[in-house]
Amino acid sequence: MNAIIHLATGFGIALTIIDAQSPKACTLHTTGLAVAGFAAGIIVHALLDYAPHCYPVNSRVDFISSLILLGVLIVTARKQYRLLLCCCLTGSVLPDIVDLLPAIVNKQLGWHLPVSRTPLFPWHQQIYSGSVYSGDCGVSNLNTGMVLAAVTGIVLLKRKGLRAIFSLKISTIYKKPRAGRK
Image 1 (cartoon, helix red, strand yellow):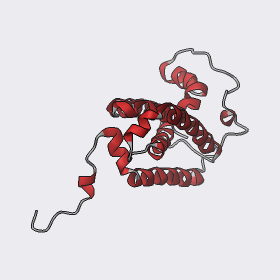
Image 2 (cartoon, one colour):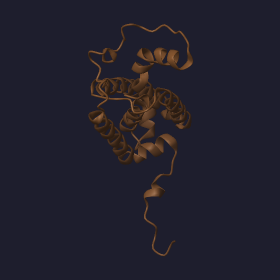
Image 3 (cartoon, helix red, strand yellow):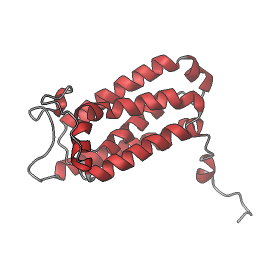
Image 4 (cartoon, one colour):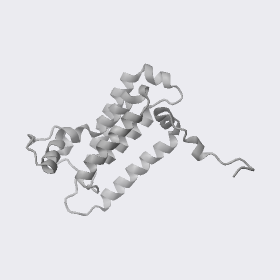
């Protein structure tokens, strides 16, 4: 699965964990929440990689856009939520960083970084991976669509968490205009 999809799930995990009603509670228990988010990111990554999947986004575009998205999300997050967000996002892409990044960098930049013959994370071994090699990506597209729909649903349901993390005034988008106003 593309890294950008894994980052989307990491963001969904962060929004699910966050307690927007009580930002102070989030900061008091940040370490525990961050560890839980990191672990959840790795577990969800494993589930997504076990499921049949193709790579709809070119690896170079995926790498660059994922790196930019990761940076933007962490830099724009409010200080008290950065650790939690960083851990959720990092957990969601760490297996790819460890097992796949050296080979991708070698291919894209012509470098010669050492590449392990046996991936650390078992779902990156061909026998356990859900990577589709036949070119028939119908099931993969359905899986990816469902994952993105679930993350979109979480974002819509957890708007308060989104506002808490980024200090956004998103609620104005959803308010109906008052009578007599244009």
